[in-house]
Amino acid sequence: MGYKVAVVGATGNVGREMLQTLWERRFPVSEVVALASTRSIGRQVSFGEQNTLKVAALENFDFRGTDIALFSPGSAVSAEYAPKAAKDGAIVIDNTSKFRMDPDVPLIVPEVNPEAVAGYTRRGIIANPNCSTIQMVVALKPLHDRYRIRRVVVATYQSTSGAGKAAMDELFTQTRAIFVNDPVERTIFTKQIAFNCIPHIDIFMDDGSTKEEWKMSVETRKILDPKIKVQATCVRVPVFIGHSEAVNIECEEPIDPEEARELLREAPGVVVIDNRADEGYATQVEVAGEDAVYVSRIRSDPTVDNGLSLWVVGDNLRKGAALNAVQIAELLDRQYLAKAA
Image 1 (cartoon, rainbow, N blue to C red):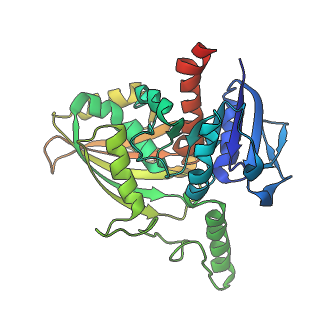
Image 2 (image 1 turned 60 degrees about the vertical axis):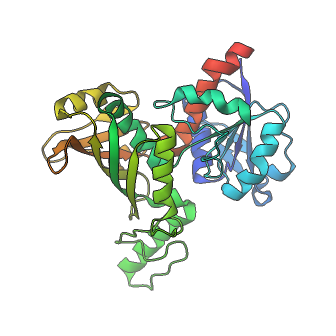
């Protein structure tokens, strides 16, 4: 059985990755439609090695007859069109932040809370979590099941691709300007991103946190456990693709680092690279284009009871966005849609 799938925001970084992931994983499609704003009408995007799709306008698209709609167009666009698509019968998997904390919309990471996908029937919408949240909870899930995590302190090192293609271009342009002694101009970031780190992602909130930090806290509780306390510091770094995180956890039960390492090795979607030697850990450059969440630097934290520190790295465009969305579609196929056919 094949499904009619619409990809909304098909010309963006994540939309293109969604199309590539659908092809690579051989998701059962009968038709794929690439949608974007009217500015992109007629542009072509790749679907597989030799196939191209002509982009159609989202504004004029009739979602009736569409089985699944993968959305990644920005929150304002999703707010307007995702409910319309769901009303017309499509199951929407939305990659924006618009619906994540809606109590009637499940927030899903298939390796962590697949059972929650059943809630899609309430509104016809499933939310894809924040990219940094996804890779962190994939790593935390087996540890939480065994040791019951009380508190998480995380510092993220997030690539420019998380802010879109224009942000990646700004890193490239600024880097080139520095090398040729041209003026460094910025339009996307609040400060120079080339050769710099910016502890500011999304808007500031009243308590001094940024919205990105707030997202990691509330999304982790919705996905993993409402009792977990999360303190995040989110930093944009001069990397094109891939997010990394220094994660420290405090648990209810004593943690054996060797046991934790084995639990992570056996966990779905996790690859452990943890050799206490030069090059014995994963970095953003190595994981770009990879599906797994990579965990390194697993060690006890002697400053708190039942503490553990670890280094978590993932491709934010794949597992942090496109792959997770396609995995949700696969979950729907296995558990609901194929059975209803």
